[in-house]
Figure 1 (cartoon, one colour):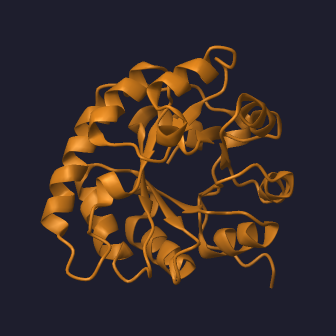
Figure 2: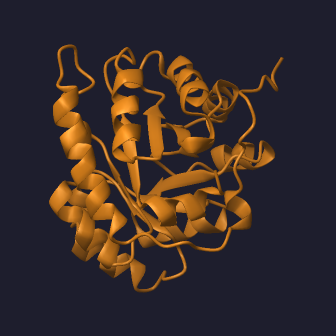
Length: 233
């Protein structure tokens, strides 16, 4: 699949997989993929996430981008890349994480909130900037306010993004949105409904697809699309 920024611009939606364990990640990911979701994030705060990333890369191949979320330390970068993560998502701006990711040619969607943090993340080489937690900060109004002086920075609002919000965020200039609980619901819990997930995923994809575009590649957003590696061995 193409580089990360182009994939965000084309598909406009990232599904966040976060749970008490990763036992349902594969089932949920297959439902999401069948509904048209092509960017998935498995958070490293979930026990078993690295193994799930490896399994999903093998199962979905080049037809999806499997990323690692909650990347906070350079060691997390190594763990994620060794598992086969095609991109990384952070909750905060840690220059050491961005430096290590650059060494491994792995693109980062860097978490930030204030204009200063967003600008710092972009200058440090992020492929895009995750504006988190967007709902708590003011939602669409906040996105518009920070985007006005930073129009060149591709922003991915995250945190409390519901189906009804997707169109407003994308119409306001976000390159994509990322959704966790409003999209996944109870699907990652034992006994959670996968049919309900399929319905929600179809609705999210339909809302996002109305804004799909194709953008030129961004040099700092190049993908690592090879098989999971072991650079630390």
